[in-house]
Image 1: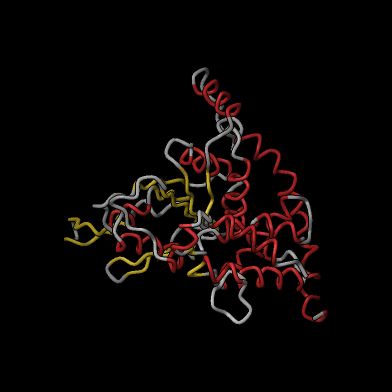
Image 2: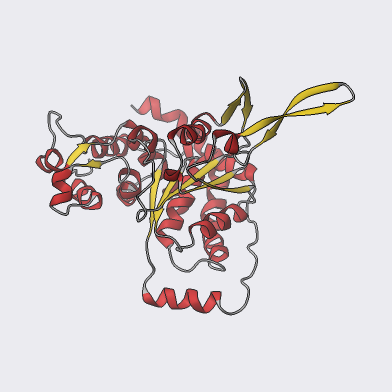
Length: 338
């Protein structure tokens, strides 16, 4: 084991400058976001972690909670090209990826590919569950492959590429819920909830008085790509990896050592990607906290956003009023760090 971890530790000193830059910039990022966003520290941290890890986010929240503003503001801080796509029942794949248009020139007629809104660094897929599966699949292919295919020709997307997809938990009629296999492609499911009264008062005061100050870019797209490499170089102990694997595996029903409440309340548990994203997210959180190593708290703090869309509860859990968050808390209580 020691021989395997040595190369990573040798490479780590080369990344220390980038780590310091990230840790020192955290307060500055929060300061810039506070110009337009009040509260929501948890969701902001989770979105930043996903961005710096190179993952995609699902955002669940009621209308009017500044989801679009938050995503757009993060894009401005990292100086990323931002596009918002409103998903509707009549949206076609070509409306997202782009289409070929017949153009006439002096040399004759030829087809010219016109890029769609997916060709951006940060894409907000608003109400992704309102569009048919065929259109959802076009976006999910882009998320996985970082490219799209039009008329048999592959077109690479701009890097870095980051998708945030929103779902409205209230209006469920006329929706096309994402299958579990497609939900699994999202690193986190970030829940944005209503603000406490004092913070709502502050929002009303800010939005009904003067125009907010413009957000100043702090990083560039090149910085984000460098952060992705730096994060992967963060050393992590085998015990931490095993803890993440056991936490994800404990959510699977009908296994040899499955906990009783898992069999009672869960019909589908988390797969291997859950453990991968737990460790990757924990590395980013450690760096943002100014640490060069992962601790148990990093994994525990990211258990909810990582697992809540990967655990499918059954009718018994619904009848007994047991939420996914309740189950995740019980998993954290039962599965002890090594």
